Amino acid sequence: MKIEEYISTSEEETKKIAEDFSKKIKTGDVVVLNGLLGSGKTFFVKKVAEFFNLSNSSSPTFAIVNEYQGKIKIFHLDFYRINSIEELYDIGITDYLTDSTSVVFIEWGELFEEVLPKSRYEISFSINEDDSRKIIINKYE
Ligand SMILES: Nc1ncnc2c1ncn2[C@@H]1O[C@H](COP(=O)(O)OP(=O)(O)OP(=O)(O)O)[C@@H](O)[C@H]1O
Ligand SMILES: [Mg+2]
Image (cartoon, rainbow, N blue to C red; front, side):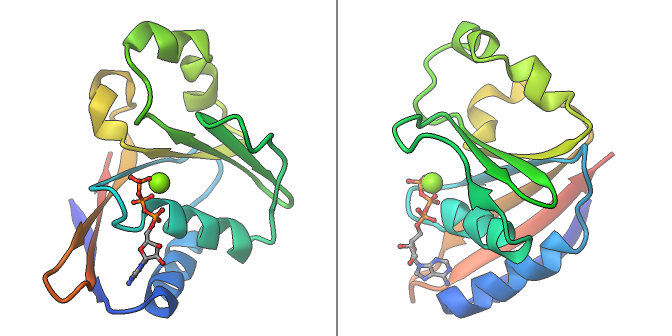
């Protein structure tokens, strides 16, 4: 079900959208971010982490899972460089997805849709001709 649709013409507007979304989420939620390279997925997650004043507590060279800690815990996963579902099981995907104490964001989640829980947010990002971003937030129960 579509719950929000926005056009963002600046980083500042996307920051505001990310802040509004931050107020909706709770621990245990899974949020999938889909959309082409450079459409704003990482930017969005960083603004959510900033909203909660979290600091990045993972090694910058560890590209698949980023961890943000503070008042809440966010795992930020990126499936882009994952080649097979076995790799996902090797990094412990099931543990992340069932961790009721954190919020999990997954960039490029659609690449391995079969591992995703049915109940999740899905945010799609696209780039318009004028370089603005269309951001659609869906919620599936
Ligand atoms: N309205 C906007 N909202 C968000 N980002 C914008 C906007 N306009 C321009 N940008 C720029 O678009 C880029 C988005 O980069 P970002 O790394 O978030 O993309 P991404 O979707 O994560 O890409 P990838 O799939 O490669 O990981 C940033 O450089 C940001 O400054
Ligand atoms: Mg990214």
